[in-house]
Structure formats: C-alpha cells, structure tokens
Amino acid sequence: MKFNKFIIIIISLFLTSCQQFDKNGKSINYISNQKYSNTGFALIYNDKLKRDNQISKKLDNRSLLIFHKKIQKNSFVKLTNPVNNKTVIAEVISNNINFSDFYNSVITTRIAEELDLDINEPYIDLILISQNSTFVAKKAKTFDEEKNVAQKAPVDGIVIDILGSNSQLKKKVIKRKFLYSIKIADFYYKDSAENMILRINKETNLKNSIIKKLSQTKYRVLLGPFSDIKKLEKSFNKIKLLEFENLEILKDV
Image 1 (cartoon, rainbow, N blue to C red):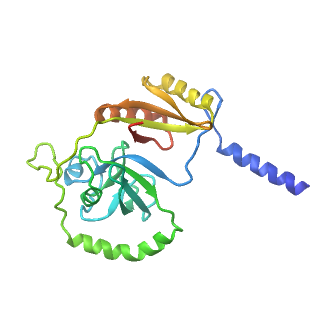
Image 2: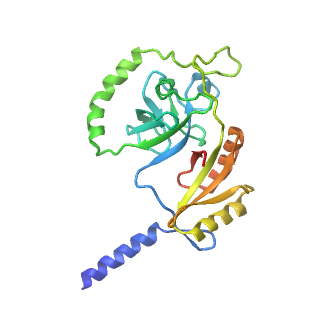
C-alpha cells in the first residue's frame, strides 16, 4: 500500500513539473511533440551571407550538411519539400551558429537542388531521425563516404540570385500564391488557447491571432495569415520574444 502511494506521489510531481502557467497563474495545457519537427523556411547558404555577417560560419555547398540551433551535432534529419514531397537526409554539422531565428535551418545549395526548392520561397519540413533507428545505424557508416563524393561534385543546378550581382536562376520557378501563418502552439482545451490569445494581445501589438479547432481535444493558435514574407518575418521576430518552445510556419492554413 505504501509503495502504491509513493508511486502516485512521484507521478503527481512529474505531471506538476511538466505543467506551465501564464502570468495570471492559469495553467497552459500545451500539446507537445514526441519527436522534434519543424515546418518553416530554410536559409540557403551562400558566401555573401558570411561576408555580411548574417551567418557566423561557412558551409560547404556541395555537402548534405546543415546548421541547426536546437538539434544536437551529428544528428540526422529528414528534409522534405511539401510541394513535391521530395526528401533528403542531412546531418547537423553544428548547433552553435548564429543566423536569424526566422529560419529553421541553414541548408546547402546541393540540398536545395535535390529538393527542387523555390529559391525565393524555400519552405521545408524538418524531422529529427531517432538515434536508435535502424536507419541511423546504417547511414552513419556510409555518410562519410557520401560526403567525400559530394566534395568532388560541383553544384551547378542552382545559382542563387544575390542582390547587386549578375547571378541568375538557371531553373524556372513556378509562382504560387504566398500565404502562410505562424503556428504558436496546440492546446487540449479551448480556454487555454483563449488565454494564449489574451497574452499575445497584451504583450505584443499583434492583433491577427486566431484559434483553429482541429478536434474535440486540439485547438491551434495561429498568427496570420500573411501574404508577404517581409511582414511574416517581422511578426515572427515580434512573437518569438515571448519565448514559445517551437514556433512553426504553416502554408495555406
């Protein structure tokens, strides 16, 4: 009997420690992801970004390597272009690089080419591959060899159009309507989502937050939609000051 009571106390303490509260003391019931994932815009590396101090380290554009701020170094991620469902497996080479929080990663032009990304709208899904997956065990053995091959192969399928240069895109880009929203968080209860809306209204000057009901136990708080990437980035930078755990950018929601 005493052992059962002890177990109940431990579980209660664990649940309490996981619970978050707003400034008024009301509980915020987030729905958290079991595995890290993020949907948003990637920053496609070029040397001008380094020269202009928009990024703190160089990246080999012939490689299948990325920079990420949250994922552990040497982890593998799956990158997907939602437009065509093309995927690529990449390795996080560093998580200690300075670049704008608006981007969920820094990728190479080789990755952009293999995903057939729109250079002006490099929208990707990023999912961390579990360390205990059979894929990682197999891929880790062959990745070094693949990187050596990549270093010998020039990237010529995409040329990034840099302002002030004569570079031009070699690939034709299909124009699509730009319409994105910022996903703040998912909640179990509607009143928790409403409390989040109140917090956003109180602590920022952003007034375009909405609640989208996904199911009886899932309510999503969104900011938007935005039809311009500059306005989207400006609002993203404002809302990130509230230090939400994993902001995402969702298309056509």
